Structures are given as C-alpha cells and as structure tokens.
Length: 440
Image (cartoon, rainbow, N blue to C red; front, side):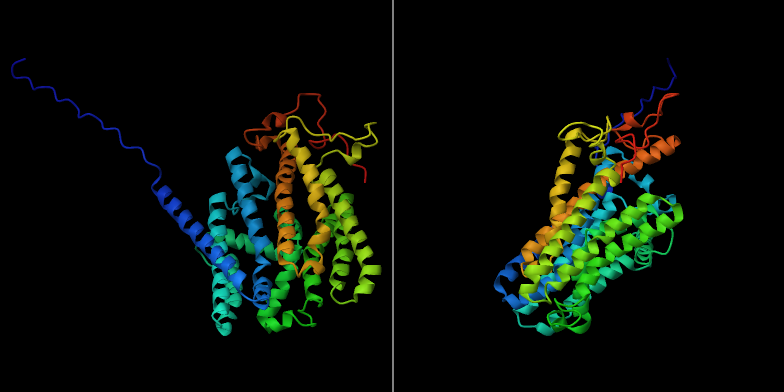
C-alpha cells in the first residue's frame, strides 16, 4: 500500500558451531601432559635401573617400592568410581550423609592420581640420576622430599585443590589409625582396603626409618633392618586396626558375626610373626620348624578370609548351601537379576580363591631379595581388593534398598528390577543372595 512501510524481515538465525565445553580441550591437554610426564619419568627410571649397581638398585627399591601398590590402589578406586558413575550406581549412599558430601568423583581422583604418580616417578628418576652421577648427598635428599610432598598433598588442611575432600580423607585416616570412635562405613572400608596394603605398610615403615636414621639403618640388624621388628609390626598394623574395629562394633551392637570377624583378622598375626622370624633364625630351624608352621598359619588365614568374603562380605550362599543342596558340587545362590551376569560372580569367586592363595607369598620376608616377585604379588593383592569392591558395594546398596525403599533405585541402569518394592504379603529376603543366615 502507498505510504506503508516495507516489511522488515528478521535476520536469519545462524546455527552456532557446536563445540564441547570450554574446559574440555584444556582437560585433554592436561591429561596428555601428565601422562607424558609420568611415562617419561618411568622410562628414565627403568633405563637407569638397568645400569646402576645392585647396591643402588636396592636403595631405590627400599624407598620407592612401598608406594607402587598404594598408587595402584588409588588408580583402581578411580576406575571403580568411574564405572559406578557411568552406570548410575549411587555408591555414595553406602557412606554417611556427611561423608558422602566429600567423596571425590572420578575426575578429581584422576587428577590426584596423576599428580601423586608424577611426584613419585619424578623423584625416583632424579634419585637414580643423581646416584649415577655420583651425587649421593643430593640423592639422599630426594626420599625425604618425596614423602614430605606426598604427606602435604594428602593431609594439608588448607584450602585449594579440593580441600574439603583432603580434610575428609585426613579425618578418616585419623579415625582409622585411632579406632576409639563408633565405626562408620568409611572407617571400615578404608581399614579393610589397608589390609591389602599390609606389605607396603611394613616396607614403608622401613623406608621412613631409613629416611630418619639413614639408609644404613635399614640394612643392618637393628630395628629398621630386614631382621628387625619394624616391618612385621607395620604389616600387622592394618589387621590390628580392623580387629579393634570389629570389637568396637560388637560392643556397640552385640552382633555375634563381628566376633567371628575379629577372629579372622587375628589369624593374620601368627603368619606375619613367623614370616618376620625368617630373617633372624638359622636356615635349619626355619626349614624344619618355623616354615611349616608359617605355611599352616597363612593357609588358615587365607581359607577363613575366603569363606568370609563369600558368605559375609559378598553374601553369596555357597558353603552354607552344602547341607541343603545334595550335590557333589553345590551351586552358588545368586540373586536374579543382579548387577552383573552370573558368570561375573563365578569368575570373582574363582579368582578370589586363587589370589587369596598368594597371601602366603605376599607376606614372606624371604622374597624381599626378589623385588619383581614382591611387587608382582603385592599388585595381585591390590587387584583382588579392586574386584572385591564391586560386590561389597553392591551388597551394601541392596541392604540399604531393602531397609529404606524411599531412597529410590540405588543400583543404576541395571539391577533395578531386583530392587523394586515387594508385593503385599510377599516374603522379603534378609539379603539378596540367599534367604537364610550362613552357619558359622
């Protein structure tokens, strides 16, 4: 129309270029840098170890070998948390509400693992390089600096770098080391994991003794030496903590199973004491008397612990079904549906037995001369504990689901069907894997 304004068309909307989060590229770059740093330091360490004399290699292993299983445990826990996050498993429900607020996610654990691994590998590479260059005085400073840096990184109470999580870890570690309070799930879980690091705790005690008194003290016949009492006492400490925790829970709740659990941890002490005596007695006494006693004590602990893993920690009815199932080989009673296929639980039962048998070698002071064998068996025990975590957390979540259905589904994408509320009049099993308490 005359005089009318021409219509003004809105400008075409441009579709923005889709990119990831701004920090995604930075995270990938950070991951690549940390990985390259760790791999480079590890390669330098391996090359230097091949060229140095045996005395220097022994000195390196004294300080750095105890940290390998501990770092491996941290990485395995990171993988477990990542797995639960991907499946939507609410594993934090196992912990108290206060503790759950401070649990780090897999991304935080990954950054912590890479940083702590870098501190360890870089310190080891510099230590060996300085030994190779004849700078023994400078090399002697590396272990104290490394252990101090690790302690500050984990326990420093100040802000920054996830201060709440670090303070939570420090508090839990203090509660575990001084088990005089009521035992929380975090206390139990950390202490139980620590029993799989008992060899590292004993070797770490010798390493700290060498840091304080000089490396010569760790190779003599004194308290810090291979024949001294420090390493066996350190190895026994995690079991003593768990024993005291069981006694405390028994006193607080009257649960008879905790008394039997305390006996399980007590069976570790004879094996540790006899293994520690191997370096201080003559070969004839060891071979004819002490070694058979040691093998028997270690086998008793391994058998008792395996029984407890299946019947109590995992609540899989196997041994308790032998008087019910009239077959030559009883079938494990598993829930259906469960979080994982039945074959996974059968594999875990078999591998747990095989890995439990390595307990005999893991605590043997006689194997200390073969560093590769010691590290291999220590890592096998860490891997066994890694597998144990999945079923133990699943069992705890199922208990919580049965006790508090108002929490909703805790098991994530799979296994939720088994957690639906029971129909009216239907019997509710006492736990998910079998319908009666195991006979102890």
